[in-house]
Length: 336
Image 1 (cartoon, rainbow, N blue to C red):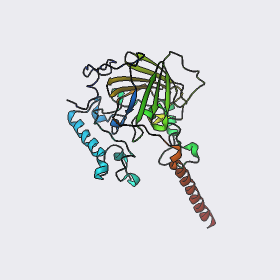
Image 2: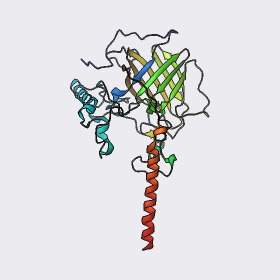
Image 3: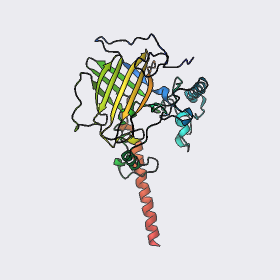
Image 4: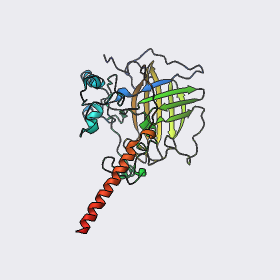
């Protein structure tokens, strides 16, 4: 029995997974819409890769033994501050050179999973859990991206919208990260609002059937339109600014369309599903699905990014220092 399974709590009437039935009945707002309101977090997805390791094939879920091993990793990460032992899983498994990440981070810096999840990847379609290949145009855009760890920015414009505290886009605001994983859903008659902890974005989603705005009006978070299908909130978002923000590791185009589905499957869990459709970037649409959970006591704090953004200043300052150093060496060589 998978004690931590979010799937066992759900009926999945939307047809995504016939894993078992539940008597859970989603609550309603006073005006009759399914009630999705609350503060949620994706912390439990920390350590779950975006794309599935080939060893799992088309298997979406860990075995009981694999889940037990992940539970040990979750416990180790959760207790790392008390023990002072540097974790070797999740984010820390990617850190090769130590540096400031070599020691266990203070608890308020990093968000940890509280429950082990049996997902083998966030991508659920294609069935192999892998993002489809890029189109030739998508390959060009990926090749043109600055190399984050190798580049020497000539100006702030060479830095990403994330580095500059502007936006991470819809997916970057909601997909699990090492911090800022909270979101809050508000509802009112005819509208839904979603507030993200990551870079303090808020989306206002009309439910009244109005058409999308004209193609000439675009934004980093796009133009969302929503409606309910049974107990599921369906949100279609278009009108993105292309070439600036990435999804799946490559900047998307202006043709990007996101289709999100929010279904409350337990008192503290919403099943979140999003399909990324960008024919200029990917050779086929692909879908991510995972649970978001309400954790007692979880709060969304101010994301004071600009006020504390020393990283952008330091990177530009270091780049100019390297420029001066190289210029001095070149001048010295010329003088000989």
